[in-house]
Length: 175
Image 1: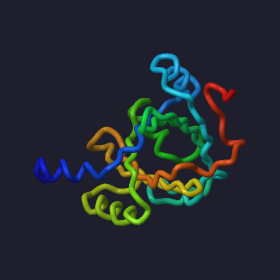
Image 2: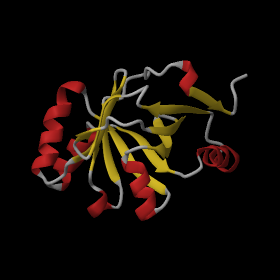
Image 3: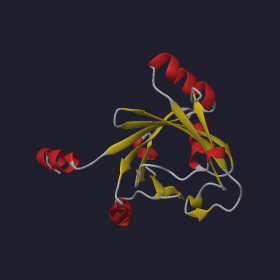
């Protein structure tokens, strides 16, 4: 693509999120608040009880799994901190091989464009390595890590996700 074509193409795109992996989510959110004044954080427990149609490396996950996800916004950008807890997911393997730190950025893709865009990326040699649903929220991670050093997530980015309150906590605690 030319300079001008890239400029025009990227005007239409929305990077919704930048995400990091940690092995201690409580410590991580405290550091973001104390050092950078980023917060408050909503911390969700994603698990076999809260997610549906969860696939890792093309295989439907049938065993119990769990990971925690902390979310906070800086302006229009969502910051995500994730911690694997148990079961199959791409986060634990990433931490084992690369350590904690930046894992992915997430681009908003509409539901009607998702399938076509995933097919286009697959044609360019990039496969989905994890996907799933949490209520109306769909995510698909594209394996860009071997060449980019981080992954690329696609998501439909609804305003809210559907997780029961017993799977949610806050830092700092809500007043």
